Image 1 (tube, rainbow over the protein chains, first blue to last red):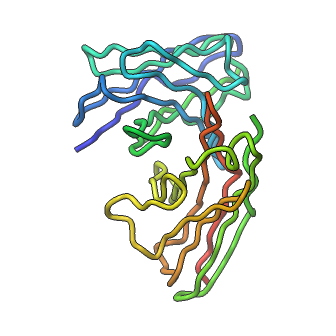
Image 2 (cartoon, rainbow over the protein chains, first blue to last red; image 1 turned 90 degrees about the horizontal axis):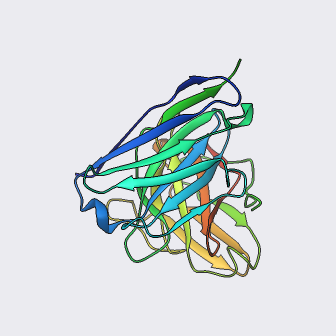
Length: 119
Length: 109
């Protein structure tokens, strides 16, 4: 059974940083792209970033480029999102999702970790 | 990277059909056959309902169907059931990134 468990969220001041983690199980982690998607409570989904299975390629939404960094440790079956220079508008529930094999969509999602940026 | 446009809400009685549109541009919806749809119940993670415009994952009822014409994709729910009441989001691949729709609340009357 595919499982994705996010952690690392919390309350942080504007300008601060966090590292979000997503622990994966139930599939061959290194064979799949992994994504981060965020959702402001009560609002819509916004794609944030993705990383290729071997870590050799990454992509970002324009709104986070230069501030967020996605990475992965295939030995630990974990994908990370380093979030820096946080702004109030980064407050959201951050979901980790698995990219489908052979196409361009996400097929399994975690339950999310909440990041709140406030002074 | 603008969000795809969806109607804010649609509604229908049990057994009826509803359709949700998802309008983008030739750089996303119109440029790729990689539109997916997600269902999200309150407080839950999104669930994949349709991928590659019109394919259904295993376990998704066949009353859910997807299509695309030009820059607009659509999700149709036939034979609406109470458990279909949820938020629905489309998503399109756009070359090096992905873009989600604004979301549609489906209400079962």
